[in-house]
Amino acid sequence: MATARSKFWPWRKRTLNKPPALKPRDRIRLIAMGPDPDPVTPGAEGEIVTSPVLVGNEWSVCVKWDDGRTLGLIIPPDRVEKIA
Image 1: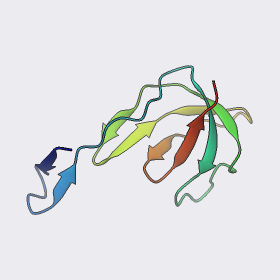
Image 2: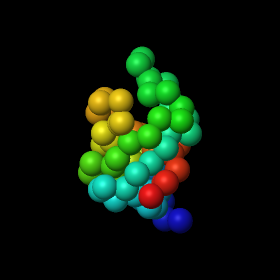
Image 3: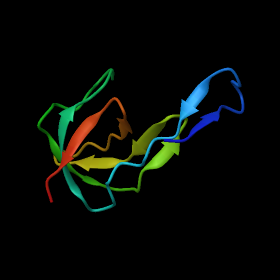
């Protein structure tokens, strides 16, 4: 795994994570969500809307949940499994 120093925080090493194996239209099930003021319930299912985007040291993925919500994932700490 490669490491790089942050442009804005040169003393802080950043690990370049491999992107999650998710692509638009994949069906997922939420295993766990990190700290969020209004989290999605574990076990909820949804559809990936966008490809993963690296933001800092985490991957951001937009999801349309089956209950009508559109709340993105931050991987890590959020965890999902692909179901289709």
